[in-house]
Image 1 (cartoon, helix red, strand yellow):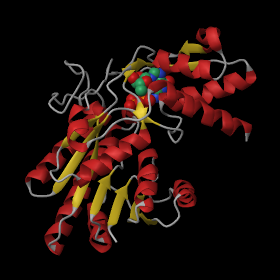
Image 2 (cartoon, protein in one colour; image 1 turned 90 degrees about the vertical axis):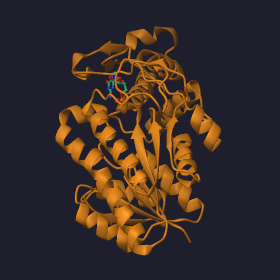
Image 3 (cartoon, rainbow, N blue to C red; image 1 turned 60 degrees about the vertical axis):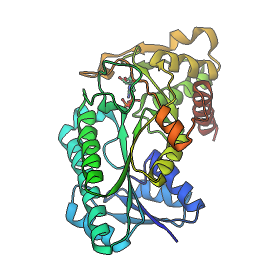
Length: 324
Ligand code: GDP
């Protein structure tokens, strides 16, 4: 049976990916941060059968030994600091985990391939944040890499390293993910922050959501669709870079309006949002929108969930959580 190793397995994408691979009969191993028992427990109850290993992504020696012991056929590097907002508070940690950590994973996979003599395929979860304040729109695989956040800079380094190891003979695909959401998004992200608050305000009939940049426009997709793109990309005959996006943008204000409407707040939705400077960032890409034409053509990939449906699923989930 094929074996997969996933870093960042307890996150939104990692958990969907683990479930997907398990359903295919793949033996799934994952790396969890030491002490992250709560997330590991939640994942094991959702996807029993996965094998978890504790380890620090920043420790290349431990990672190398672990990958050599597991001997995976597929390696997915999803780990790191996932929030751009948090990366401004912890830029060094972000560089270590989201940037240097990727180099450690690639090196471990490369060593395994060299020592075992069999092909190891890798997927690096790249990010639209590598484009930063892009001069062209929509962004595609040829858009210059010009990050404007510590997160984007760390991911840019990881993206370049993926290309370096591809040149060295390792089968490394990257998915340049635009924002992708689901009910599994942590509250640190604006989408879940809004849907959780909208559900609460809908139930109580009162309350406000304090937000930062309401005009930021993002290309928001459905996370399981993006996991599907990863699997298609890593298993494609030729490893390459793929933008994964819906091609449509909405502002943070649009998201808040759609969520509050779904929660039953109709025409007075504006009364329930407020700008708080605490949530503004030192720099924020004004618009990120991707052109996934290459993924559609070469991988046969399609997003299946539109904006209204995505917001609806997240708000409904948060309303159910409140009721239970
Ligand atoms: P990320 O930037 O890709 O990590 O995703 P986020 O969901 O954190 O942020 C998406 C966009 O929402 C960014 O442009 C933020 O500046 C903007 N935003 C506006 N208000 C907020 C807020 O209260 N929290 C967060 N996290 N982002 C906000």
